[in-house]
Image (cartoon, rainbow, N blue to C red; front, side, top):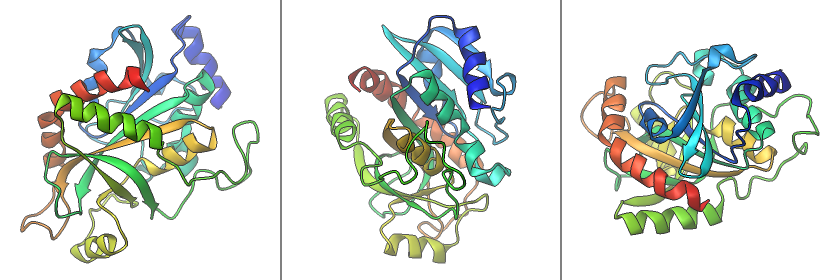
Length: 268
């Protein structure tokens, strides 16, 4: 099915050959509008590509240009909590890899665990904790995609992180590094779970990204991850968490994230 999806996209994309891709998380879809010469394909029109059901995820594959750079954008993703399998969650990344993408920037909305973080801050993911209880590589391995036991000691490229930090400094954008914990969801974490996550080294927490990053590393695709702290995690502040806050914060950081990605992508 991955090959069929690739063939369908190529039949509509013509001579476009993106080597860099961006995956946009909850409320963070504004970057796609910066691309010129855009081709937008709803996920539902691509064979085998699962459709986004989460609020704040447009559910479109967008091919376009950032200056001379050919870029592919996944405007929205699917999650395990929507009922999809780990392989379905990683499907888009697999297709991008077959299309020739060699670098992917993953963005997501995350809850802040580290007490030094604030709502609206950006965190460069240095590593992750997979607490979702699943892995997209479980089952028979496709040796044409990657090895049976891929190394994950540098799941998030050190070189890309260095470039990202330099770019942020140049632009005057605050950017810290931290560990992303991925949980299944869709319920938000309890205060006790947040205390546990803090104790084991997590700085931010979310419900996405990790299956895609594993699949990307399996295919030899270099990865950069950026979390937008859309809310402080349960128990950090004396208030309840709601998804509207996530979307509101995504809108709040829109211009900063667009400016950052626009400058960063040509350097990867």
